Length: 264
Image 1 (cartoon, rainbow, N blue to C red):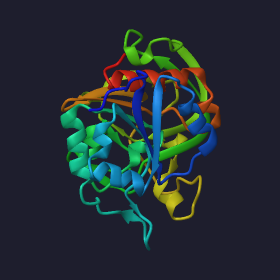
Image 2: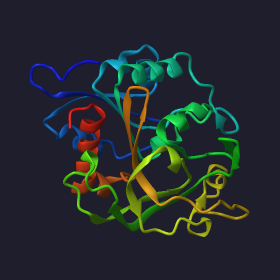
Image 3: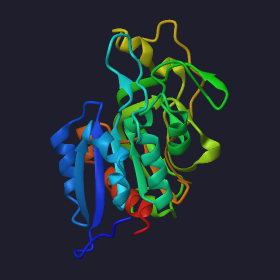
Image 4: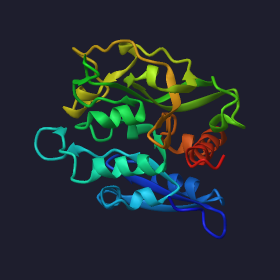
């Protein structure tokens, strides 16, 4: 793993691609922290950095990407590119810090090991995880909810308000609660009738839930875990300009990187 360098800044690799986002304000938020030296790569260059081992050389890798969906013909998971699994294995062997944000929970849907690594999965299509059959996940954009810090003594939540309001996108999806340490919970009601079907949206029926159902979901929207030698952070809050400018979200991002890189 590389060190922060002569100026003592952390070397952070920021990966995007596969999902639209407000590019300029998002990148500006990440470039605003003087303790980070941020290298930004988009897919397919980001895929190459994972597959050839370059990503493992950074102190931390931040994922705000959503690769792995085949754009050709009927939507389906894309085959995992050669070297990507090995790239993640190398990062967790070295202890590279891994921070996953928002829609990164939906990446690499053809690889079940990714869900185990991150601590959950957002399903585009009905799928199987840990022997359980799941429907496609639900989404709800631009929604106000209250987030409560449930682990106030954790370095990732240090300096974050105990409770704060955020207008953001929420997910109804699988959270492997028995494999994560919860940091944040939302006061929103995570039931199918409050969300829309992802599969229906992919078929052109935006904001629709006709014929769709989903088990009640977890209210955990931020967590940590460890895999191999790596520390891992997942933060669901962080969709859009309002979230990018929120002081609590920025604090969670920067704390998450430092904790994952063992530089808290």
